[in-house]
Image 1: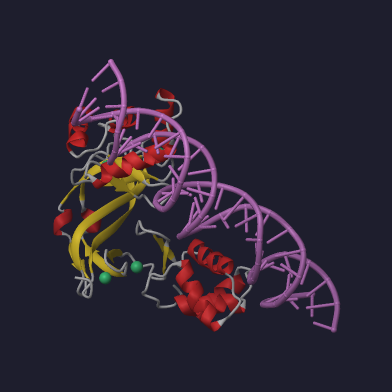
Image 2: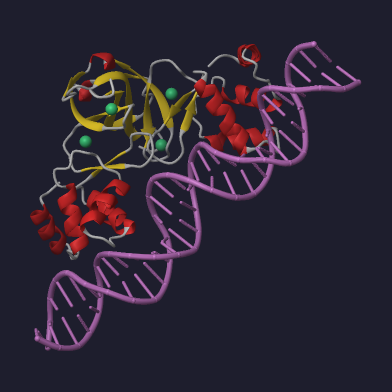
Length: 136
Length: 136
DNA sequence: TGCTAATTAGCAATTCATGCAAATTAGCAA
DNA sequence: TTGCTAATTTGCATGAATTGCTAATTAGCA
Ligand SMILES: [Mn+2]
Ligand SMILES: [Mn+2]
Ligand SMILES: [Zn+2]
Ligand SMILES: [Zn+2]
């Protein structure tokens, strides 16, 4: 994801307004490695801006996602997580506490797939299930 | 997943009753490669047994899943899908029509993962995103 | 400073799934 | 075959996550 300053320019350039709510969310997401849910961000945002609405958090996050600045991660349990890391990477989730971490997988492009039967593959998502150091 | 006959025995052996509703769902799921949702199965089941409830479909599917006879597949869009194929395998989903197909991936166990940082991995789910032959 | 289109907030609605309890029934024992 | 009882089925209520809708507000520009 771009920096808050760069996002400010990018938004204005597209005719989108840069509101205090959006600026706060730019800051909260920039460099964020927690893979937070919308609710989690709403909670963080509310601490700094009481009265901000959950609706606005969802709105801004999906706006950023459709601009390609965020990725949506579905770990198959509860709410979707938002990820400012848009580099090619994958995830481990701890079955104990639900923590999600970025992992980089060598050779995932070259996996030998059997049974494609006419399907063509555009992208690959790998989710590793396991335990973090504290939950082990 | 075991055959309907084998499941009948397995259920009785555990003190679970074998109802017409369950028998129908055993038959509908056995060898089913569609990865159906609960709603989809409910629709098929209703055609053969008007009055069967969606609640019972969910109940029976989760019972089978906790017995290890079914796997739950979350493709990150809409409802969970149920899979009687419990062999080690992965999935391709067509972004066009949502069809899901089984694929077998060589070497997924030996992927070189960077950044685990204390996480230990128990299992791996690979989801390929692409297009089926008709949606290409 | 004023205009206007974009945005926000709040509440309704939707989708998928689970909780609950009354009515029914499978499976066993007599 | 009959009757008992615990398991099951239903239908409805509830819950979690997300999107739809719209009146009130505001950013950005003339
Ligand atoms: Mn990530
Ligand atoms: Mn499958
Ligand atoms: Zn953990
Ligand atoms: Zn398709």
